[in-house]
Image (cartoon, rainbow, N blue to C red):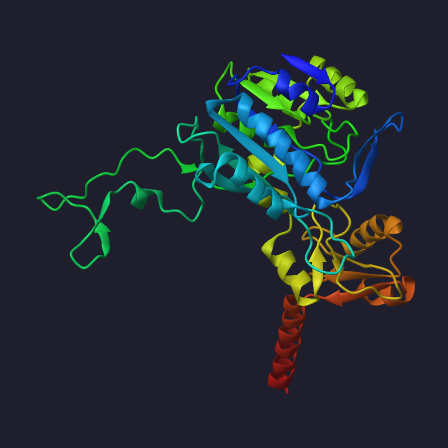
Length: 403
């Protein structure tokens, strides 16, 4: 296990040929920027330069790196090359030339949620990882995931065949009984990986620019190596690949030209910290707290739902007087005054010029609210409007019958 400080083109030629099972590269992306980030306590700033005189210089450098990576890979080895839109199309051609297009295995899309921005065009919410093998005889461990909730498990357990018309039908024996299919383990990993970006408050985050989550590297290492295999990262940065390798019982070699990055990687290897993703384990639906009834109300007034907020249920899509408009829906066992106070408290830090309180059931204090709190607009839910209209209609009918 090694963590080495130097330029990777200086150290890669010193590594033994055919000695590494996996190479993962998260190299400079040809962004033509200097990347920097401070630690959470602002005590340290890490940075690296991704500036090149030309695209040709960048690609020449990467070709030399890839050639050395191919040399050190075992015949059964693989390389995973991480890149983004800046030069991905050029790098794909370069990988084809070094490893051969026949050894291209997958274009992995790492998809994640990002905050919206003001940039014109589509929001960037994925990066690309090219997966190449050194030969056709590459190591690969199939990992299975759970079936989609929409999958009829009872049906996929039954074997199928094509009949004389080319139509897929259940395979039956001579007595007409359905033949069982082979044992089902789940759905193999696809080439689209939804793994969350590191939360700014995640314990795993160390303040290194472009730091990747350990969960992403663990998946790459799990499918392409076994326990005891060696993993190489020629641009190890803060050491995420090395930490993931250590946690999974693999040997590792990390190289970086920054002494600050090497020291950080060594520290992380001494005290590995991994942040598990609640989103991956429980799914997006576990974050949804609004009922169907509340969502219907919010949709009717064109409001965006807010999850995990005890005072605010949503915000109108449009601002009023240049400020957001918060919305609260009166809860079933809640009087209007309690609902109002919760909305006021939760909206204080949002600088809301106007708030909307949706009344969902009858209250005795209703008539005086318009004068008491001019910043709060109180409206009735549709079902309450209909309910009270029907009550008034019954009253009118009864009165008419008495006359």
